[in-house]
Image (cartoon, rainbow, N blue to C red; front, side, top):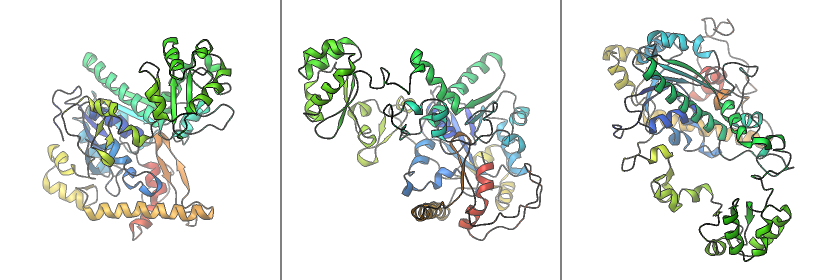
Amino acid sequence: MDDLAGQPLAGIRVLDLSRLLPGPYCSLLLADMGAEVIKVETPLAGDYARMAPAELGFGGVFEAVNRGKRSIAVDYRRPRGRDLLLRLARTADVFLESSLPGQMSRRGLGTSDVRAVNPRIIYCSLSGFGQTGPYRDRPGHDVDYLALGGLLSILGPIGARPVPPGVQLADIAGGTLAALRIIAALVARERTGQGAYLDVAVLDAVAGYLGTLGSAIESAGRAAGPMAGAYPCYGVYDAADGRSLAVGALELPFWTAFCRGIERDDLVPRQFDPAAIEDVRRIIARRTTSEWLQRFEDDACVALVNLPCEARLDPQLQARDLVVGSGGSARIVTALRATRRGTSVPPAPVLGADTTAVLDAAGIAPRELRRLEAQGIVAGRQTPERAARAARLGSVLARMAERRAAKGTPVLQTRPTHAGRSSVARPCRHAARPRRGRPSARRGTARSSARPASDAEYCHTTSARSLRRSG
């Protein structure tokens, strides 16, 4: 891990129990500002993003949002594991979780439990719809938050079906909002000495964007607005090579430079004339993007529409230190990370890589640690065999999904949950498994102590419980 001295959040310790994208993106931002982020994962599989199958297009997501963090594997769903987390919370500054509302309290890790051992801690609950309101217990994913928040309706051409973006905008917005509120709470703590409880919803972050529409909110999504292709000076045009150019010439000097570049000074007075859109479209279609970019002046506000893989090779991004690595291995980091020029970018942690070191620093004796590991309450650094097994399981699920999708039947019953997590139910063919002997906190039913023989069987038959109830 690189030197954090001098960073804004140096000395701040974060316990991060979140999974997949919104919460981990939040803690990534905090880590990029120098915080020590301890990613708390369950021993069996850890963050489910670790198993996200590359075959379905999810490869590398875990590594992208978890670099620079530490990982401990603790089964906090069991009493002894919960006690370990409360012990770690005594010296933490931030406790971040993204479970279903009320789930952490049922486990004895709610805000009152954690703040009882550390009144100065900032406890942040990040969920899809928040801890209050009629949608509190409703499942949801990125596309649902965009839809309810009003943004999805304005993505895509007017009159056509809205097009979900290729990146999880809502989840990233929710994670960013959570990070901002955590930082604000840390600043307030310096003045008051008091900790805080933060209820952050992904939907809140999405809806906040609507305010920038101003009076156009009344017609947005039903009629093209000034930022949605209503005028020739602001839109996207296809060139002769099949590539596209983005034109953002809203101000008259930029529009004048654009008209000069396409040799149509007569269009200068028609900057906000919708009828001129077709004229511009026909003109741009006559030449390639490279030919047009050579003709435009730097002040014409015209840009090539880059593919994501092209953006990471763009010289401007590289000059701003937003890209680390080179060629096909190049990857984009956050602007917060980019400010730390000259420092290496640490990788994402192996599951349980820091369990021993973190618990040892918390005063857990080696003998006790070995006993906890034997009981399955904690796990040390994931071995290559365990990592390969998890990767195989993800690939198996991907292949099953592809085969059953071809037949028109789902491989698993899926139920999206809060803050961008999925709860995956049992295969439709299988009957419900008996529950273990102790009462369930939610339903009061008994559970069986039997456990499937293979990891694949275990994943399939217990995922309805473990994915829905794990934070």
